[in-house]
Structures are given as C-alpha cells and as structure tokens.
Amino acid sequence: MISAIVLIFGFVSYAFVILAVFRLFRVNYFNPIVKLFATYLEPISKSLFFFLPPLLAAVAVALGFKFVSFYLAYSSGYETLVLFYISVIDVLNSGFRILFYCVIGSVVLSWVAPGNSHPLLQIIEEISAGILSPIRKFLPPMGGLDFTPIVGLLVLNLINTSLVKIISSLA
Image (cartoon, rainbow, N blue to C red):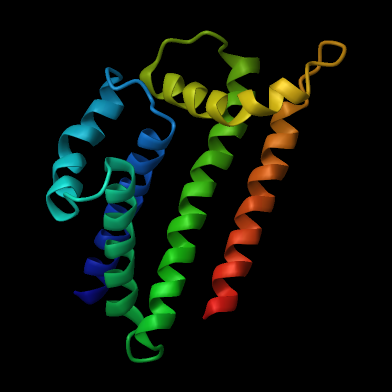
C-alpha cells in the first residue's frame, strides 16, 4: 500500500515539474497539452502556495510531493533533512532530464518530421528553442551543420552536475 502511494506521489511530483517547465519557457497556453496541465494542476499549486509566482509554486508542490514520497519510503533509514536534500536533487534532475530529452527530441524531429503541427511536438520545439536560442547567438550554423544542440546538451549537463554537487555538499 505504501509503495503505491510513493509511486503515485512520484508521478504527481513529475507532473508538477513538467508544469514548471511549461511556465519557465512560457509554452503556448493554447496548446491542448499545456492547457490540460494548467487546468488541473495550476489550481492546486496556486491554492497551496498563493503567495508565490506560478513557476515557483509548481516547483514547491513538486518538491513537497517528492519529499513526502521519499519520507514514506525511506524515513526509517535517513534523517528528514537528508531526505529533503535528496528530493531537491531529484526535482532538479527531473527538470533537467525533461530539458535534455526535449533538445534530443528536437534534433530527431528536425530530421524526421520538420514543421509537424502535433501539440506534443510543438511543445518540444518551443522548449528546445528556448534552450538553444541563446547559444545560437554565439554559435551560428557552420557549413549547414548546427552544433548548438551539442553545446546545449553539454551546458545542461554541466549546470545539472554543478547544482547537484553544490546541494549534495550541503547534506
């Protein structure tokens, strides 16, 4: 029974991380997938953390659900503060994992289905454009090849690794 609750809380936490990514990159609200997340998850985050902006409220709710799931699963073996640090690291990793796969998905989509109008593919394109457009200002295409996704993936991995090291040193 506890493992089912832990699993459900983990999925709900991941859903709020996705909502935070949508808010961070200001993905088109009229996209049906974004509207679904905003319609069902935004009221929860706004009611719990009404004093925070929507992006931070979504991150706080994701962190809360992840902490409760870790606490239910591992409270006998770890201290509460350590579980909190682990949940912060896990929420950060989840966000960076979503960004990482959006960049990879954008590269694959540019080969397979450029200009597709599917709502999920539009979300992937918007998020990856938000990540890669600052890099494209400094690294233009060279000879018809675009190296910005490689640089973007390296930068995402570097930031994620640095944040995890900083947070884990606090624990």
